Length: 344
Image (cartoon, rainbow, N blue to C red; front, side, top):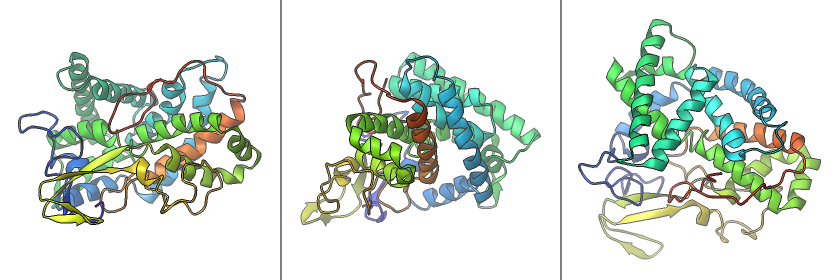
């Protein structure tokens, strides 16, 4: 389904359980990368990819370890913290700030705004105010980056061309807004909520499996396989939907044109046909062909490598410096059919 966009559309009825109506503000089919089919998705993905040149990503990777250390520094003396907000959510917001060439505190504020919009939803006053604040920030940033271009993704987007034309200010502002609300919720399938959910959920898993945690602490070389196992076991994204564009079938089950079908990533990541003892958490698991970043194809997460780098920087920093970490209270989870994020 992920690879066959001709049969399975992301745009026809969007990719969420709640199908938007024609007058619904949430109906961004054909505008948001998540809810877009070729050829528009192909063009926009190519545009966004211009901000992820090898040089820019390499430069960012060098900073992530330092930022992970700074994040832990900010909480280490407290004795107690809101791990999701202060640690797991802080690093990806700083990474986004680095990508955009803005102050780290601005990145954290924009992250807070996406949280307000995500939780509040349509018609919520605070969500509307957050959207206005974000759009105003985009306008100011576009003006500043045009006057003083830098080596960052915001400048790359401003000077990138689609069909031989640069983005207008309005196009940039519109794209920037949804970059933060959805692409940020993706980088955030790639640097925001995915990393936050992966690290926060991963630490819960490691606390629940002290033997596996001890293996990882004793042998740091296990970190790459441990990160992949955390991605499989936690599955930071729950589901996306596709719409059948013609009559077809899935493993013998008839599907009619117009039917909406859900892809449940946690279920796929516990598929006994692909994983030995799939319900067992194993930091040494190899091979580990999980689908935490999608099942391949054009919608495979753009920020997958960044998410891996962030997790690989933050998890050992927490394990090595926040010894004997334990829960200070019950874990509350945000009700969602999209992201199994720990709320706090």
